[in-house]
Length: 152
Length: 88
Image 1 (cartoon, rainbow over the protein chains, first blue to last red):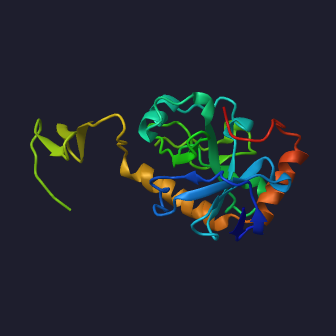
Image 2: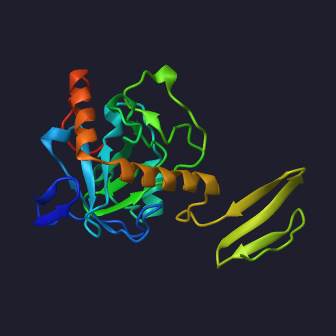
Image 3: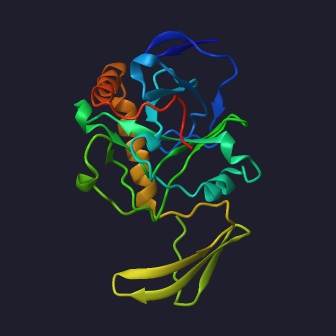
């Protein structure tokens, strides 16, 4: 199907892979329908594009690519989302990245607000992790010793 | 906003199944207990605000150009080349 995007113009994406966020996302509570755009020119990032607003998109990434020990209580996440009985293999985790620092070396990832995507139900939620040792602005490229650790 | 005064040990009932208890009061702070069903999230407000603010900033800054630069930097550094798709 064809969709309009601010980032990439009008593009063709695979039919049917639309993720519904029942409660939207913090800051965007009325935005419910999203797709994940994979492109070679932006890998390892993907574009999380809102269908309700072509001007709204985020770049996301698999956090395990830069933080192998990233831990999220997926059982609690499943309960909060109403997915208790689902196969954990159907549930994928992404983090939203932030390029507002202006240079690629300073790109950060929000480790306390991961996106949890259910690939069987085609639903998604953004978790808000409380009591987490992680940062909402974790430097993807910097050495671990120099990370900002902000406790929630 | 509903504003109520409670003493230590007293409680509030929110809806049918959320109970808020005043556990302890010290100068400048109060210790609060919350009982709620497992599917209800309970957060310090500033944590939610932090996520909200980060979402707004990230969405405003998102551009194909700057993410392409970051992608190039990733490849230049020879970092993980695992297959596409989300986490574990």
